[in-house]
Image (cartoon, rainbow, N blue to C red; front, top):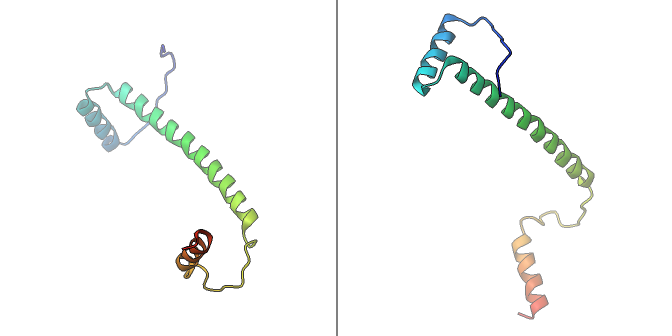
Length: 94
């Protein structure tokens, strides 16, 4: 894509030096490095928004079920393994 837009901003001398060093190390121009940094940041920020939406959707689905499971066994989770094994044995005649 042809580049036609110009944007400039002020940075500290330290940051400018670090950016120039990074560009040299990557064998890129400063403009190419800054464009890559900006594109990477934009992609991550877009992905984060989608991830947040997905988390909200999942949370809403889970909250619909919250408090709906009832049972009279207070230690059900602790005894789950033995309960599953006994049900399998009854079902398969073992």
